Image (cartoon, rainbow over all chains, first blue to last red; front, side, top):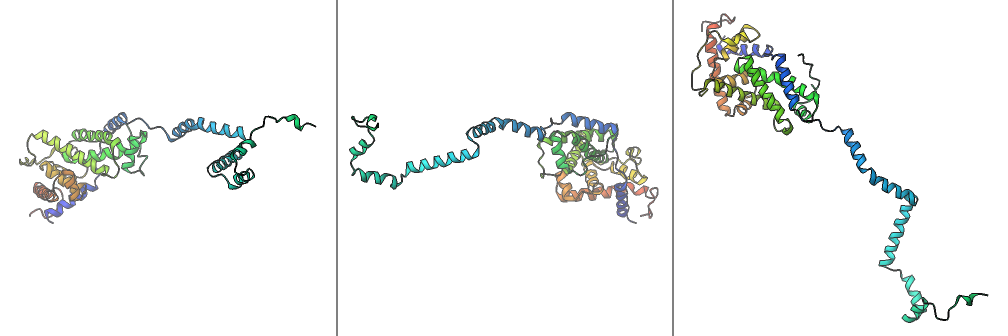
Length: 129
Length: 196
């Protein structure tokens, strides 16, 4: 058997042998240092969620209260439809609304004004029986 | 003090370090049980002295605790990092003790190595540890990492910050020196063919 073979055998035996074990005191010292140097625990996930919930609660309460006051979500839908219709009429007035009125008055701007003004001689007593 | 078993055996070293940095109480215990004995065993094989090995391993673990909050998973294996730190601490200690270049002097040959009295195991293992203690520090480091820790040459090269060729040279010279040291003890250790 060569020197190399002997060495290989000795290395194998050394690897199989239990590694030199440290003392329990040593492990306790290492652990104690590790605990002393450990960063403070992060907030647990449950606490984080609760904190986030509390933070968003006032905003949520405002919208919920307004909704209840005007009749719930259907009221919001109605408001949205009315707003959209008003915007559309303002930007692009339908021809059917303007043209008949203009034709009846013969394109006279002054007459159009008079339609909407009450004349001097007008009196509600005229309609009284 | 009796240490409980590692309760996080199924968790990787990286994740355990992350848990430690997040303040998990059990992570410190698991890391201690998992890494401190490895650092100690490596330091003991390189230094041959229990008290010094404990000092080095404790310092290596201190560096683990310090680096935990900044540890980036995937950059390196925790055990590789620990090997490197432990190896460097051992080298520094040996260098300070000798006060000169590690490979520039011949080591005195001691036929009755003192490390054997603390090394547990068979007579051959004790003899091997004693012989290792007679090698120059870097040869010993390379031989221990290659043949006892079973690291690959490129990994050892990275740990020791030298080339792979240099690792091969160190381990080769180390083995030749070990064979020479153990030559006269072959019969006592139960090897045949002691007459070579």
